[in-house]
Image 1 (spheres, rainbow, N blue to C red):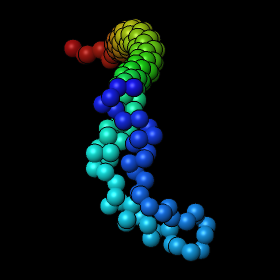
Image 2 (cartoon, rainbow, N blue to C red):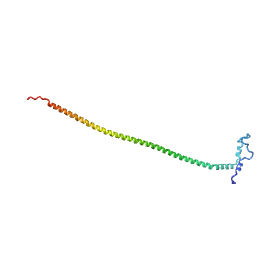
Image 3 (tube, one colour):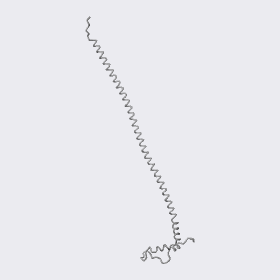
Image 4 (cartoon, rainbow, N blue to C red):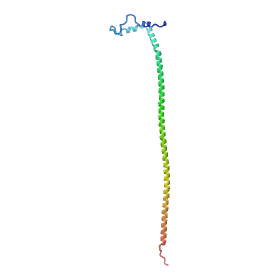
Length: 171
């Protein structure tokens, strides 16, 4: 050991008060706090500082390592949380893409329905146009036949009129 550091026995010797030692714990002759105040006064300040420095130097590196490890864990946890949030947003995007795909499929389905309805409407329009033309032709044909019948009746009426006997005029 170096001369600057007191031996463990020496440090322990400086902590003990000179004179009679207190009774062992468990004896009923003295209270446990009775010698405490006297012990505190007799402790050397230098020894307290050395013991404190020794205690700190013994535990400080481990505490600093623990602190650094905790900081690393906290940083890693923050990175993991960010990564997790990104993955969650990716899943949400996938779900929204699936929803968009579903909407596009529905739109395609309804578009084909609209195209079919339009074709049917055009076909029905053509049929109704043909039927209107046919109805117009039939109406014109009936009107023509009625006119011809009327004209035929008038001719027959005129012919009958001419065929009926006329009294001759006396001159």
